[in-house]
Amino acid sequence: MNIFDISGRAMSAQLARMNTTASNLANARTSYGSAAEAYRALKPVFRSVSGGDGIATVDVQKIVQSNVEPKMRHDPSNPVADADGNVWDAGVDEASELIDMLETARQYQNNVQVLQTAKSLILDTVRMGK
Image 1 (cartoon, rainbow, N blue to C red):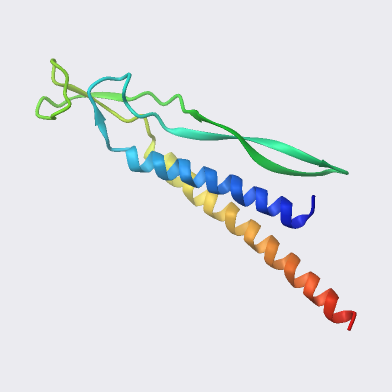
Image 2 (image 1 turned 60 degrees about the horizontal axis):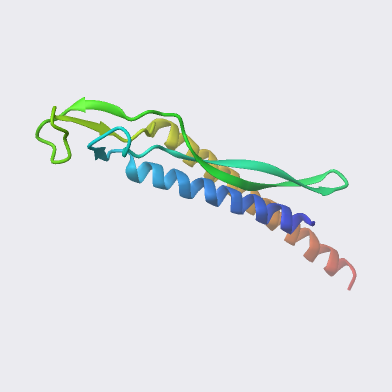
């Protein structure tokens, strides 16, 4: 495992995190006819992958649903409302998702910077040898 593998895997993990966040935000303001069918936010679960000699990176182990419950509200004019006029809004905390999106973008950018620095150092080393 080298620096390019480590950063590449970290970028892939952050991309999975960004995809789940985008899915959560896309479904955030959706209403459903029952709590059982209502959308619940998705979250990636990361695991450390050891390459030996103290080197490790990250990988996505699985994607799970969060424990944020859908919120019931009375809206009899909504076409998906139940017989009592209730609908359930997706179990997504939009503020939390936006914070996750910013953090994910920063983590991804940090790994891009690591790759750029490693590339620059390798090129400088090659130039020194000429």
